[in-house]
Image (cartoon, rainbow, N blue to C red; front, top):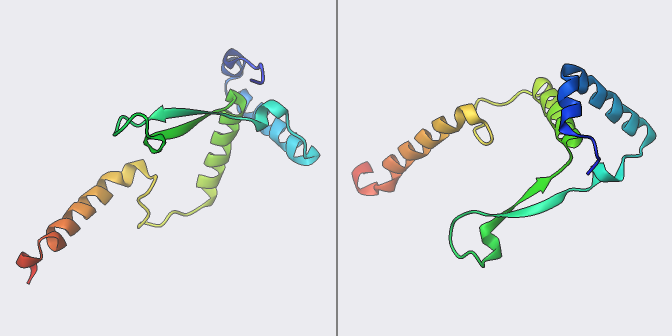
Length: 118
C-alpha cells in the first residue's frame, strides 16, 4: 500500500528500526501521516466453528503496511519496557497461559462438583 517493499526493510536490518523511529517522530511533530499508513484492509477469517454463513463466526484481520507493522512492534517493545505487569495477569501472556488453564481446571474440580466439597 505504501509501495515500500519488504526487501528494503530487510536490507536495512537494525538500521531500519532507526529509520522507522525517525519517520514516526517527524509524523508526530508535523501531525501529518501518509494516507496509505492511515488505512487498513480488514479481511474476515472464518473461525472454523459453526455456521459458515453466520457473520459472528468470523474475526477480522487487519492488513497494514510493513512500515506500520514495524512501528507497532517498536511501540509494543517500548510499552513493555516501561510497564510493570502484575503476577496475576494471565491474558495475552503466552508464557503464563498454561498456568491460567491449570488454575481454572483446579477451580472447576473444587467447585464444579459441590457434593464432594461439603
